[in-house]
Image (cartoon, rainbow over all chains, first blue to last red):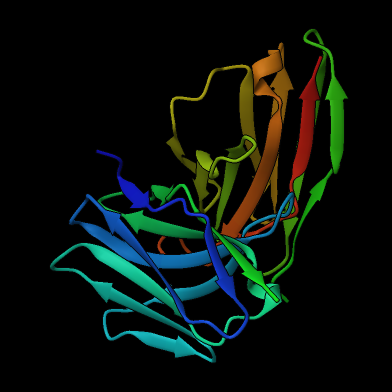
Length: 110
Length: 112
């Protein structure tokens, strides 16, 4: 089993749609969680950190479920500019190890 | 300012060459990282420096040699690389090892 698992997609959605991504992690001692987005041939950029209480930033909402060991990202009112790969990132578990999920490809179409 | 800079942007080197990748941040971050990313794959952690000390070496071959001259700089020395080492090499930094990381634009390395 991979340490961090994501559905690779691709997700093809129309503009204005709501789309949700999930990510599961295997190490229950993991300490911190993030979503990054990566555009083609660019570096990953931090989208948001994920807190136990859940957090929202505009059209983006992230949730953490420690009991089930998954995190989620919800994108509302999708824009063409949201087309990217979304990477789930898990950190910690006794060290400084950072593990990336394989990423989920999103295509938003007009 | 969440800027991490990397030089060079592109590098082509032969298998007998020695070269170095450079990374710099001026955010006062105390943790710095090297990642390797192949096409259509996620970044893979190579090295972590925390407070200028090497904390993690993810079983990286010795032809890759990291160096942290000070808290703002991180180098990756390359020697006798193989064609399969061709990839995007990303540097990142964070306030400490458990919080969000900020990535530089990467160095695209081709080994011929």
